[in-house]
Amino acid sequence: MAAERKVTITAIAREAGVSVPTVSRVVNGRSDVAPETRAKVEELLRQYGYRRRTHAPGDRAALVDLVFNDLDSPWAVEIIRGVEEVAHAAGVGTVVSAIHDRAGAARQWMTNLRARASDGVIMVTSVLEPLLHKELHRLGVPIVVVDPAGAPPLDAPTVGATNWAGGLAATEHLLSLGHRRIGFIAGPPRLLCSRARLDGYRAALEGAGVPVDEALTVPGDFYHEAGFTGCERLMELADPPTALFAASDQMAMGAMEALRRRGLRVPQEVSVVGFDDLPEMRWSAPPLTTVRQPLAEMGKVAARTVLRQARGEEIDTPRLELATELVVRASTAPPPAR
Image 1: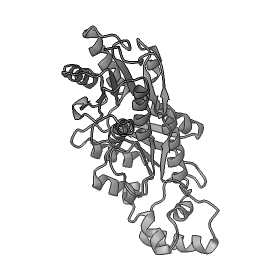
Image 2 (image 1 turned 90 degrees about the horizontal axis):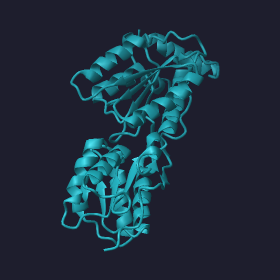
Image 3 (image 1 turned 30 degrees about the vertical axis):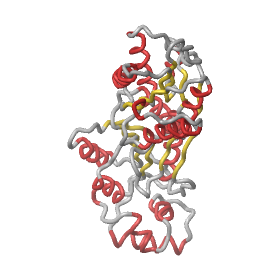
Image 4 (image 1 turned 60 degrees about the vertical axis):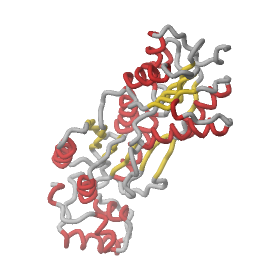
């Protein structure tokens, strides 16, 4: 069982004077290791009582854990779709979990992980307690972090999107239409992606010589209600914005509902831009201009990376950022004449 392991493959690699992937290849019965190196690593494995997983030599990983904070967002479905496509093609099962913020939930997940001897973990905007990360490291379970919430562990590859560039492109689009009062409904400040989108928004304003008005930035959490209340707050300003940039599509939908209830037309009176390009945004009324985040592709890249780690292969690039793209639809137009 995984819980019986006495030492990590990192410690064995250090003592043997070889790389971690080399030790992993020996553990997994791979043939592409020099005989003398194999003998040295095998001896250390025996000395420390390291217990191998039960896969036959040359097998690929049989099970991967995909862990979210919550599963109540449409973008989670897109990431699951990408991970599952790659995992299915590789003959690997996927276990999807939500840790939430409940006390003990992460530890219960770790207990379940040990029981099923998962061969890799994909964390999505989840923050593992240091002790849990240490335990994953001790068990030799590869980790990939998707859209890291904060500074990711130095030994964990990460997959994200060009959030700063996306925030810049969205704001520059509104500026190009003639808007100068542009409201921003932000995401949770603890998340790197939220801060990057806000920084992109500010950089676009500064680049156009438009003063950054802090009153035009309101807090949010990526969900509909925050978009609704954020829009209400912005439209109550003495000089309300003529355009809104919401840091997620769901908040953009909430903002559009708030505008509708105020009798304001989109885009004739207020333009709206979102972020994510969820599939249903092309069917909103009006269809939403948004920044496409390659969510499914991010899931695919994360799955390929964790499977490569499980096979003991080197990871060329520990930090990958996939390109975002502005998608212009019918929710943006020049500001009304004043």
